[in-house]
Image 1: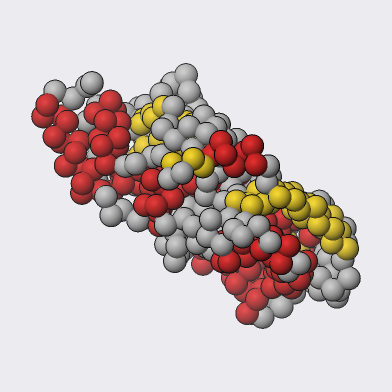
Image 2: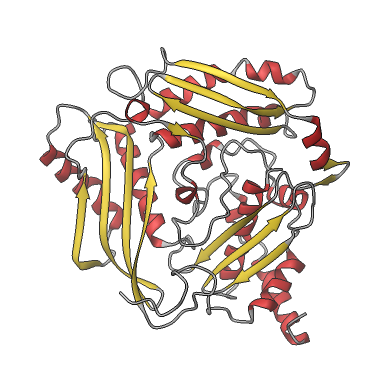
Length: 415
């Protein structure tokens, strides 16, 4: 494989040229230890937002063998609500474990007997006064966030991460339905796709590791996983001449979940986003209320990128937005269409500024983010799924954006 640019595929500056390469993305199941941590943190966030939509939440979860720690800073109105909601968190965490499929009958974690420690405290008044000043909401922290969209799939997502998510999602569905009763909650997937001229042309490799009951032999696991999980997900997508599947490549996967490894909120940020297909600012999403731009601005950047592609202004697009703590207006905005834009990227940046309010308050208002919608985001990706509450997956401003871009182009384009 030869890369004819100085940048990796999908990075800003890597413009479309005649080339071929392979790209790989991974996903993990909802029962993976890191995803358990994400899901507990977002369940706690939803608990607080369900009782006080203006709650400030920064919740972290650590899971280990028979042990959970849930910690973070919180602010509620009225302040006394905090103690009431905190008293419900332990039961909520045990429910998440049960709903995931863990119990005492196999190595993982026992929701009924595991130790849970809470280290939850009230948010600093210094932070609060810097973020909210009357009606103005400043960014909850500094940082840069990225959004991405590509027309290579109907979901406007990169094909490798989309398939990786669907593999572990199907594994969970067949496990929960009882169709494959020996499946267990912990699983990982990985998909390698061959690209030519920036278009996916063939699936090269699929890796799927799934926790399983002790009594099932490796040959049975391989046959059933290949037939009932991998084949339906890939469907009639072209396979490479040397297409390969690796199913539980270590041989056995009986011990899993927190009994097999620790888990921590925010440790699967590439799984949460685009599988490495675009840059990542570094901030995690789960457990954070929407005043934290790590989360809300990343959702807005996806909304913008998706709108640009839907409007026919680009075939694929990366959007970056950056903030300073306590400041409402973004420090910068970048649109990179990777050589696929219908207009100059500078024109599209101006159009985005015209159509979208990218202040934290504007994002929260326009995407309606002060709702308990976040537990659903914490497994199988925050993007590319048209679920209730996933307002960043809408394209309601695509037509307005196209009109704004054309008007700016007619005026002469650049600022």
